[in-house]
Image (tube, rainbow, N blue to C red):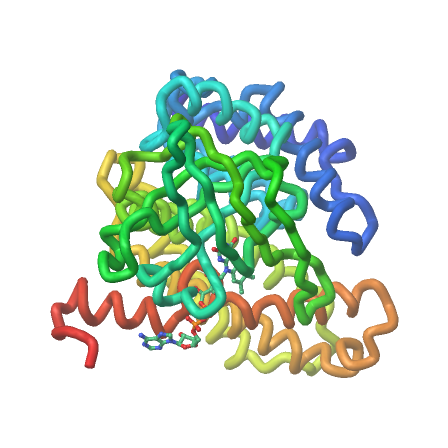
Length: 375
Ligand SMILES: Cc1cc2nc3c(=O)[nH]c(=O)nc-3n(C[C@H](O)[C@H](O)[C@H](O)COP(=O)(O)OP(=O)(O)OC[C@H]3O[C@@H](n4cnc5c(N)ncnc54)[C@H](O)[C@@H]3O)c2cc1C
């Protein structure tokens, strides 16, 4: 299916099914997770969710642009929150590229249809940016399976997840990034403990996850032993491409909402103009990334520019919103201002998750501009 035909069909389907797809009038995170499953199932059953994914994993083929348009449509209409929706875009491409084909064929449809939630177990206490130093250890037992012991932190949605894409150390610490191996782990395995962490915007979005001698079958390895760094480096550009395109669509909607909600005289044309400039600059950049991906180009370090621009645009938007809506945000006693306050606080994380802005600038300096090693 080409993009124009997809757009036409999707837009009229979304118009017709708006009532079923609308999120609950609730601030509870688990209500929104349940709603996300419903939206994924409905869009999967109507085939839209399957376009842009290979037939080998239950998709219908076609350009990856179709996935971008679907997520952009759902987020721009306020039907799903982009952070939780886009986890599919972060983790599924990695499964397709690195999981044994039978495992990907079995698991990916469950993720696309909303039957399962997956999480990304990369960050650890003291090794968020310095991922190559991670310590969660996997050792091979005499029976051939792997035993995992260690801790992850900031693992989004782990309390809802059935599976985890997990980075472990299988070599010695001196091997740094060469001694890392990735696994696809069942979250109900004995020995896993999940403890939610409350964010400053009042949501249990991420967790600490403890692994105590957890058995993982050998056929759950993603890629080869010692190839975990390549898995991570291939995954992160996906986190910084289609997922960000969806977020950009959502931010355009929030800008419109702000223009409607701001009291008369509370917005300056210059401030709004600066936000529009940043949002459109990001969208133009992200659109080009979508087209490069659709043309089969391998994404890499240049997606750090997309991530930097998104973080700046998002925070600029919510800074202007916070100034314009300050009395309501500070009072925080009506559901509408509660929404803006919570989103303002969450926007502070935009320069942290998916790799902090300082780290993105290091990547741009070292890998794109060749400005020499870090001192
Ligand atoms: C909302 C949210 C969701 C997240 N979800 C997940 C998830 O699902 N899975 C997961 O694995 N992780 C997740 N993370 C973790 C995220 O990837 C890390 O927070 C991020 O990579 C930064 O690592 P850190 O928190 O350990 O900070 P640190 O690495 O300790 O960094 C602290 C500060 O030092 C700066 N810094 C560090 N090293 C350098 C350097 N070399 N040069 C310049 N500055 C430097 C950083 O930019 C930062 O400002 C999430 C984070 C957030 C906020």
